[in-house]
Length: 428
Image 1 (cartoon, one colour):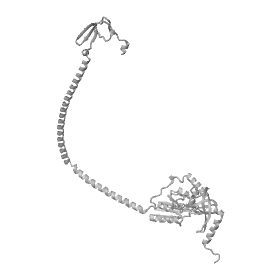
Image 2 (image 1 turned 60 degrees about the horizontal axis):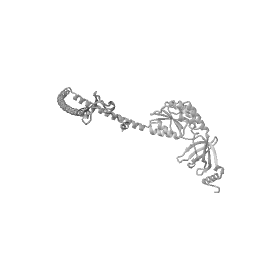
Image 3 (image 1 turned 45 degrees about the vertical axis):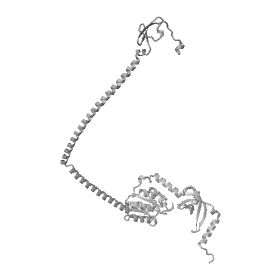
Image 4 (image 1 turned 90 degrees about the horizontal axis):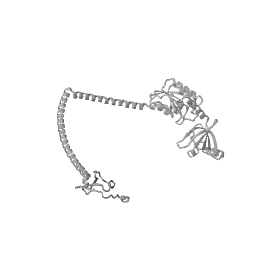
């Protein structure tokens, strides 16, 4: 049939038209980042939007050198690149080569403003956080009645503990009236006296999750008397409800695991404790039996008759031992006295020999100092007529009478002359 083309041909034609358009090959688009996702391959997928429309965009891993910051929801950016057609799906998108930050989007600014206001009011303070019960039996859920969130919560709850009852309030979680519906759900379940509430939904863009950033929802969570677990979006999504809730779960599945205790694990722990208590009781009874037997043996051991016999035998042994010790002590003291007498005799003898030797040395020294001994060596001792010692020529003069004492007698003499030494002779 003439003029009939395949889908592939049409998409290829449109792609070629885009490729030939110079303006689309080098274009810069300004908008707010929404629905941003970092893929494991390194690619970044996001949406650029303004107040009227939006466009899909992607930055491949090889182009990320043109990104100097972490791309996040609500950022106002300028993306430079080319608009091309993805031929397989027949849709066009922006292939970003370079991204610069311009500021924050309106929604993100509203988010930060409300977050700061509620934080200043103390609604995020830890002292207001209620503890999540460990063994909850009745769990309330505020979320959409259809969707992955409630299915995940139901599946995980049934798997972990089939005895836990779930109470679902089917709320709107997106679009007009969502915030009011969530608030009504929290207030309704709060009046039922449940153990814990799960408030949340699956992931989405900042617009999709905006109902959980409303002040009315935050105040409803804060004033709820039942502990609340916030489970909004994926792990990277953060809302005002996450800040004010008593606990934040990264996903609805994680919230179910936090709220519903594992019955199988609880049963195993209970069985382990029961076995441990039984074992401890058996061991304690065995110790008591052993103690009773020991006390019986002690009663026999401490029988008075036996004790008297043992004490009598012990006294006899001590008497014999004392006699033996006294004899040994007397003999030891006797030997010690004998040894002391011998040592004293030896010391006296040694002392006598030392004193005798010393006396001989002193006598020799005294003899060496005797004037007679010196005279006996050829020397004489000169005195005047008054028996005064003469040791200088200046003490005598011609005609004086002198006495010369020698070894074998005394010579009387007269001084016939005096010859003093000269200075030079004295120096020699």
